[in-house]
Length: 637
Image 1 (cartoon, rainbow, N blue to C red):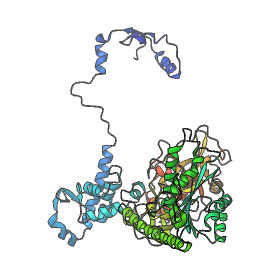
Image 2: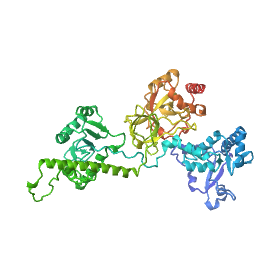
Image 3: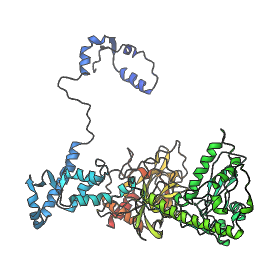
Image 4: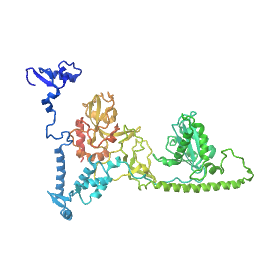
């Protein structure tokens, strides 16, 4: 190709004959045309069967192995890591006490200066044992398996006398497993039925059926149930009532018919937790009993009746589902006139002592009706029977329910627990791989044997009392692994993470970004975040006051609008070529004692990132301030 004389190029690709006369359509073709213009040649087409020499260059020669296999890891690096671990094991042999080695020697044999138990390498001290546990459980190759699988993986290569017990303790106290794995046990917490009230309409429960198709302008049904006779009232409403409107509905539909109850059981809807409703009930001498967080079983009586009412309306509604309101009085009568499985009588009979006339039947002679005193005695006898039947029904339901449940751990105040994320109102971009549990959180108060008050972050706008079915015990880690990272803050139900400090700034694709050190996370997990997502004005001003020459210091990028939608927030960046190993173990502890002003930055995907990962292809440059922070942390060691 270096010849200055004209030459011939033979090819079996006929279209290449037009290469010299081809009109360029893009920059790549223009580069090709410029390259070929440096040579004086002409192209001749020959059939593929005659192009033998060129075909030989694209064919596998005899004896060539499969070249499709690609090494994902550098063999030298793998050998280096393995050799480092083996050297560490050999050095630990020298530190092993002679008495201990003499005691174990009958179970061991020596091969090339290493001790073996059968075919498994003997690990003498906790240092190398924990390293082996980390490799066989925490590494991506091991995959955070359970106790049995981790024990089997260890026994294939290693041995020490307490291997099984150490493996069980290591796996059960793993914070990553505690957060990521779905519980496979039976529901936690035995059934605790509510006490049977002494008489009719002394304890009631209430709930709303919402988002119904419009019928005569109504979209909501208020369901109220008496816990003694099981009588219910269904009230159609145009919308969810406010607390003041709820008090009016209660007066018109419940008080005028049955008087004041002693207890009202409900969920934690905004109407029931409002100050107006609580003050209204306090003035009337009514106790407000609210369900615990994300545990509708507390108001299970009303929830179950909602299902029955929905089934009734589904049976009679038209195709447009717009005629359910006229059927609501009939649904109420049908329910109250039917035998209840718990009381063994109908709600009408339990309340009034007789069955109402529902169908056209001959009128009976009333001359033999009992006197008033006899009727009162009969009604009281009916209510005593109802009370006895309800007690028996609750005992029977508890026995049946407890067969599918397990007893809750005996939690105490100041214990730490994991909180299930199943019902937490987190607005994440994706929920598939979100953690199953957050925490650990401290128990502040034991409300009852199955309800605990937790210390939650102040920004979590949820009730802090949870049923034990939403909790899981926290096992302290005795193997000195990195502490679990703190849970996110909730700002308008969007998870956000607290900023420890701003370490650097840059312009990336026209957007100002900050290198963020997250509070409670090691320095190795700093990440580049768009300025529009960082809500820490005090820390940003402090950073630019110390380093006014950094990008964005003039205020150009504080309100940068991205040219395109922000990139996925799963990139976790750290300074390239920086070793943070010395600071990782102290980062979580130092975060609690840090007195710097903290801000908040949105990071919706941080809950799903892999610890210790790096951003692909865009390493963070170390600023002087970043070096200063790292030096300060190492200086406190």
